[in-house]
Image (cartoon, rainbow, N blue to C red; front, side):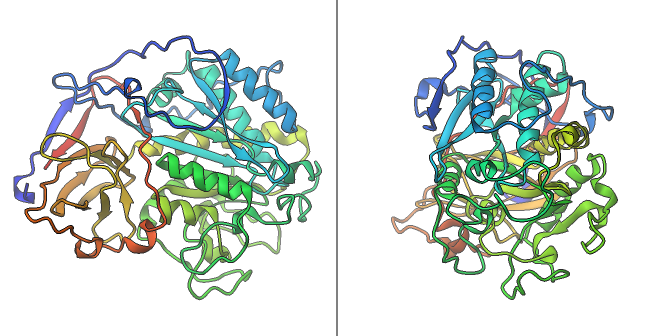
Length: 495
């Protein structure tokens, strides 16, 4: 449909009850996304369209009610065995809200545990975005590891009493990896604010310098921990991600690297992505809801201060092989780095203070996955188009559809054009609008090419898919939304 013929429909969201989930026995298993069609469901009732609504402004500004269950999780540091016991106990206690899996093992053989927290932890339902938090990529930066354990406890214990948490878990699948570097953590020491002991994995590699890089060849030998993450995010198409670090108080956003980097020098030039407005917005969501971060106070006299508590990564200091750039360029996932403590491994008695500072930020950041545009790419018969390549015009980083034709993109309010290309189909441009409180549903139908010759990605005007998409194996494991908010509207476009 041409822009002049776009129909903008306002529809009321049908308020669904939380789906009944069968009593699932807790299990710890290696990650294998299900392909059983019986597990997939998407409500398309008349007038409903299977939609849900989003209003991040509705979150109460007062601190959320959370009192840690000392019997389950106190504000102390947990070694790998204690963390494992806690995660297993949580899946046993909350089998309808959690699922535990391992994405692989560390160099020393410790499991890299991920806990899913969602109203549908085992089921794949169309339309529900996957988000993730990763902690402890540097083993001696320990606060994030404990914050993520308490986030798990907060989510599962608040589901029955907090309507916003219930909405979030009903409409989002949250994957939490508390420790990506358990070997480094085991070599670290509580009370050590600075230094590098435990920062690296057991083979001496900095895991946040170990990913493929957009700007430079990364010749560092890939480690089992980074291989596990690369495999993981190739199997689940995450929309939003945060990586928790320590040693500063700031949100750092891509790019971390630049073509002309002077390494380890402060006050370098920024290296901005095509989605710089979105990354700044996401960073401010976290910093502005944090107890102290938005003040931009430097941790030390010799350290830089950060305006509003955020910074472009390369402007802070450039690095090669960072995880957030890899997530964004190779897999279309908006990831930022969350520096949550000036001291890398502070005494345990300070952990409650860090939780109070970060609690609201961690929740509101995840909800941003529901901002922007989402929808389906289909053929004329209604079948999904898998691995269609998409780009927002003027933003030369591509993203793809899942096996079921789904796509998501976080965008700020405005008017945009989506460019769509898929082998065997005629490329298509579609105009759409984003508003503040409500995500936009954009369903696009592609017409088969009239001739047998396939169109190449380079034939899509303005696209530059070769670098971002060539290394990618797009995945289609997304979960259908279970709308909870009532009597709100959202924009729908069809083309």
